[in-house]
Length: 314
Image 1 (tube, helix red, strand yellow):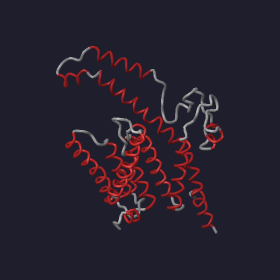
Image 2 (cartoon, helix red, strand yellow):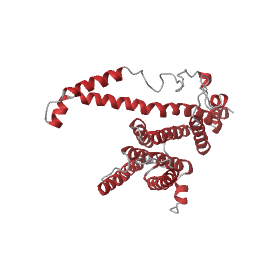
Image 3 (tube, helix red, strand yellow):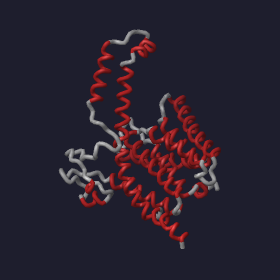
Image 4 (tube, helix red, strand yellow):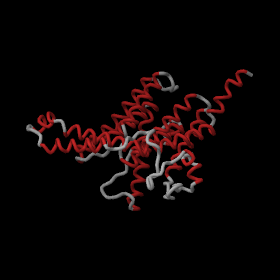
């Protein structure tokens, strides 16, 4: 009887229903991350620009001459403009309606329920709230429930839920901005290696995780340089290398080719569909990161042997 009661909390707390509720809350936070993290990075980049403009020694090394006065003035202007910006982080300031600026109270910020109660509109100005917000919450809830059903009431289930949340955030950020932030890809990579080293990934030791990370990074790195040498253009960003390396660290080197093939086929279909419907503007491209993340999630949920079987490689 004691053992039964000892097992009950995990059975309840890590059940599909409980983790779906957790996923709704995490999805609400992911909406904040997806919106704010790129802005935080852009602020940092503009700060780097200001610092570079003020670096007279660097200018002399590169251009072999004294920097013009206008560079120092531009640096000072940028630094002043950045200093005048309101603080921005993932936790502060509180969320506000982008249309009217009204602060969003906790009753208006309950995942999914608030959007339904408000009928998708701001409580103050009645401006429309994008459907993507509840869809991200529902998508995160569905992923968490799927991992709970797959892994059962085990602590490792939470680990996979965390990986899924990071992949979803990366996919959305890359779709919006064509940027895969190091602030997410690198911790995901190191966490995969650490999980393997600590034995949290049954069947995947540290050596296999390291080979997976190396295979993921180098495979796309080689494709990148082959395409650049052949065409003089960049076919993908360096963030894609790091994302696939992270997936290799979590799933092993055997998963790399299936993930890339799935991502390439689905990405090509989506790109052609967007071009045919006019959704893909001239000079723009479809980011690869969302499809890499999607391929990784498929392998995680279906299992590598199943995916290899689909491809006739089992």
